[in-house]
Image (cartoon, rainbow, N blue to C red):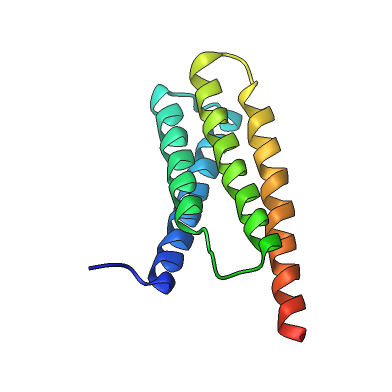
Length: 124
């Protein structure tokens, strides 16, 4: 049984939302003085879920510009995974925040531009 594109996109959206919520919860916990080992693992799982969701969400039936913007979204998910890796590599520091913010900026830009391109094609 193969997945249709609509099902794949819907699954992708659910995975990205779940992964981002897990990452958000685990990123806020150190600010509230909860800092346990399992939180790093949960953040890493959330980052991997976002990466899988972004990879599933790649579309081929859109313009080249939108495909490139989707590649930027995948790159932001890779930066989230790098952030999770940095959590394990440099314990006690906040170096992981740099990768998290870089991925966040890329995601905000790409998501905004994808929406802008969708509105532009709807007007034509």
